[in-house]
Amino acid sequence: MAKKQTKKPPKRGQDFQKDLSRLEEQLKRALADYDNLEKRINREKSLWITSANEALIDKLLFVFDDLERACQNLKNPGLIMVRDQFWQILSGEGVEKINSQGQVFDPQLMDAQELVPGPKEKVVEETCSGYLYRGRCLRPAKVKVGQGKK
Image (cartoon, rainbow, N blue to C red; front, top):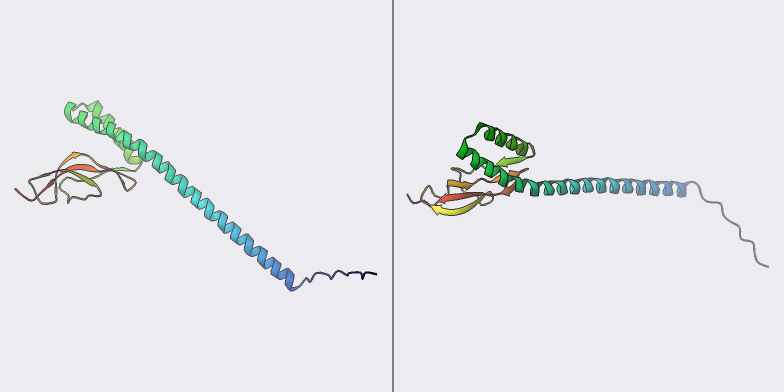
């Protein structure tokens, strides 16, 4: 005859506390992982939106440059008003003009088109404006740089 196996009642003291502690730790880790995932997704989403805006703004800057040239040649008050409104929208989105005239040449923000007589390594003339978008160089300024000879 086979012996009857008797089930031992579960220990409720220490084992229960260990299981409870282990489950609490797993829950805390799962919540932290979820929180980190949510933050990463929000960062990636923001980066994606910024990248999409960057491409659009880059295209719009060519239109803005044409408006600038038209304003310089025509001096039409209505056209100047439209250009100013256009710039307000661009600057409101985080676009800044790179100030290069008379500055020391910075290859991160400027593209040297030509070396000309003038103060060494200083921008003598800006041939095309450069722009920053949210602190990053969207389009470098095209400049003529002094070579130090007068």
